[in-house]
Image 1 (spheres, helix red, strand yellow):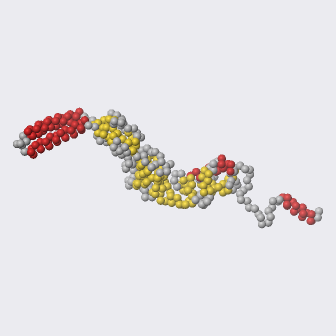
Image 2: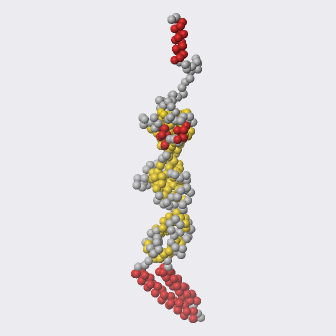
Image 3: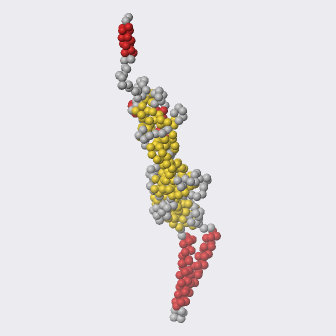
Length: 364
């Protein structure tokens, strides 16, 4: 075999073994590792291949990252209070028995108007007090009878009696009649319990015939469009850092009214006013407040479900790098509020998986 033949055979064998060699100056760099099949799988570089049908089945959702300054928020525990500017209470001014009004006793949740009679309070007296008042009535009745007779005698002698003596007798008689009427009203009269403001009855603590003591709470009226929220802060300097707040699950903004200067059970009370809340709240109901502070955190705001842990227990987010390829990206996260995190390590324009990140993290 000649030397020329051996060279030709070697070239032919090389062409057979390397049929896809690129031409000089046209090398093709691989953009992603080769795929084996068309099913979801973890690639050697740690990324995940996920076909479009699988993305729809797993409900993968993404958002475009936008790096900006985000106000740091805190989650505070609170409860609903009566707004003293729009609500009111009806209490018993003295011991007595409850009597229904002409329209009956109102029910919780019923709307009332200002000045409306809610019930009557019939004062209750002991036997000794009633006996004393009856004795006073008898004395006043006798004194009035004597005063009336004296006026009649003086009028009969008007020509010989000075006019001032007649007027003094008439004035004394009128005074005795007024005292007698006031005492009778106090003994047998009843007190009308009226609504101090208009609103909705939140508390009705009476039944017909009930005996109540003085200062006992009978009715509580609230304006459902204006409520007070009291939150508890364990940082005494938080009141000076607050910028605003809102209720968890409610779009209505809260107006910060101020904070106390004395700790109560180790916490500082903070007062907020809720104007036109989108939900109904009851007095004393526990609520969650999302309070915004003046502290700013630079980064991309993401829902907490977008951040998962890799095999090394590091926080990562999944970035939609290509149409069917997702890449894990380590980030540093800081809490923004109860449902949102701020991630450092992302750049604006990247598409971050916000729904389905946990499922992507489980693909092997």
